[in-house]
Image 1 (cartoon, each protein chain N blue to C red):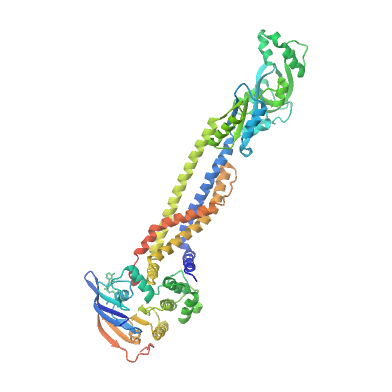
Image 2: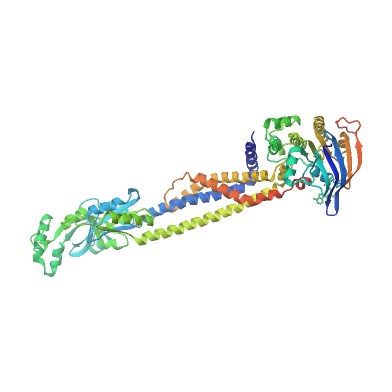
Length: 230
Length: 410
Ligand SMILES: Nc1ncnc2c1ncn2[C@@H]1O[C@H](COP(=O)(O)OP(=O)(O)OP(=O)(O)O)[C@@H](O)[C@H]1O
Ligand SMILES: [Mg+2]
């Protein structure tokens, strides 16, 4: 059984089909990239997988359970327990320090543990910035805090919507390396990106166009290390 | 770290690190709490203050004899009914007709200290009598006889029975008694037959009394001097009491006196006691009204700030929800912030309120107030309740925030 399966999923806004009969399977531990032009429905799909939205039609099976018709309350619980989210904007709570931001995810998930949160920051190379506020961190550092926050509760799936879209190459490399580590630990990764190099690093890349998949590329030389073609 | 600790860490971080945003709300809560605690202090202090204040306008209870007069002992008994700490002054009076330069003047024997205390508005030019042979003269009397402070004056008393004898009817009957009286006192001119019956005493005027009232047509001496002049102890005609108490309490005291001493009849000076009551009731109603208005304004300000806060922090709320926060926990956090804000504002407000009440009290009553420690927890609790209540509706709006919608856009 796949960890995640989308069966004939559609999301319709008025007469706009943001997602149009999408089918997709993601195995446990897989690293999948999703590409596609702006407005093709990538974020819409991520929101549905991330349990922040429900499809108009179709089924979404997560761990065998259909999450397409659950209540808001249950969505919150699934999100809390199974999913780690990383966004293009480095969404952090602006009045909490890096450490406190990571602990916030622990707080909603189970119990805050300062030591463990600190270790997560160490993993993303920010131990010395733990007590800085987001405004005192660079964009790359902020995104690394977001990564630390996404992995703190050992989610089954990490969903990243354009995680490197606003990063320079150096920071992109750091974040991609963190993804590689997550992948090596067995975390399932779904990464939305515009960047072909980011997409090519994944095991498999899917292209979404006008609400449905048009192309799938399997990376036969997968190493998890990003290559720049210059 | 426990969840509770993290909760406080988050809400206090929000208040402390977003303090510039919360300042107005904090200020409004603090001012609200200040006015609340200040007015409550004044509210409870005013009756006490007003009582003392009103006591400056004279006595509010009089004790009258049931028959012609009552004894000094009964006067003391009546006085003893009033608790010492609420008794501002007690003035016993005995009135007699005396003569100066052959014309009749009303003389009052009293306890000067008691009169001074129960009639603080009496204005004495010169000095209050402090011993035997000293006389306080009403302004009217002083003008009539041209009396000045420091001058001697002779006061004559004709024993009543003989006084009546001027008409020439009962002179013989009572001449014995009058003679006996005159031999006891220092009647000087025994040679003249008419004057033999009069008692005379020399006084020195120590002060002229100015009250703007009927007191100005009296002369005042000590009870002992009056007894000596008249040759008899006599009783008291009235006992005036000045008491700090509200009307109900006063009535109770009056009843107690009437029960304890059966020769007297204690009564409230209605006009004074009632106007005290009316002023107090009106003042307290005003205080209540102002408090309600201020609380309402505070609530509006807090509600406005909270509404702005929720709007401003939409993104954060969406993010928290995306991280798995339930509507419940978001509400708890914002409520926690509101209530913490209320607690801090309440604390600041109580301190300010004390100074506010102190200022008002000094300005109006020229009297300092007592800090009531109980007011601190009460004001803080009230501020917390007010901010909590005011936050309720704005905070409910957080449940409508959709994480997907918030996090999608730029
Ligand atoms: N709440 C909504 N109401 C109406 N239309 C919506 C809504 N959300 C998304 N859409 C539409 O659905 C389509 C897909 O949007 P989506 O955000 O998924 O695109 P995307 O692939 O993520 O684009 P980008 O690369 O620019 O982020 C767009 O045409 C968008 O306008
Ligand atoms: Mg998008």
